[in-house]
Image 1: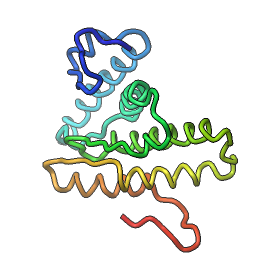
Image 2: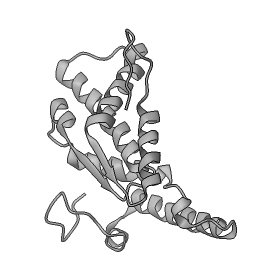
Image 3: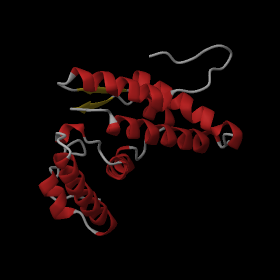
Image 4: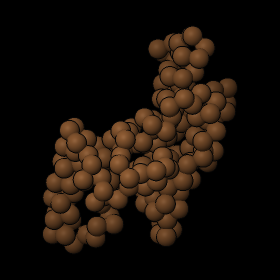
Length: 174
């Protein structure tokens, strides 16, 4: 989606700018998310919780990562996907990093299958996906946060997202 006034694919977009250019299904998702966020914020306030304790809705992380990667991965090979280094500032509990790992792993496996002309057998697909997620979580994604508890939570969250049954006695240990 070409966004007017954006000169670089690496620029970030403000919520105000996105509100003015989003259309169709994406705009509906953003509006639905905003509605859910307001309701959750009101419920959190009534329960005495601060906004920092509320999680990012999966529908938002999934949609934003999907459309970011749709453009970012154009023309990239499977090997180039595995060379990407990605950083999330103010990562909180790593909702975006986890979604990024999931979608990058899926894109990597799709490209591998396209490039080799072979498909991963159905019964092995989930294991192969977990292996790729493990590699991405361990070597390709980074995050920072001012809250040291959020950093620990994010590390555990990424670990849970990428854990898989060990093969031949080997297992991923963060």
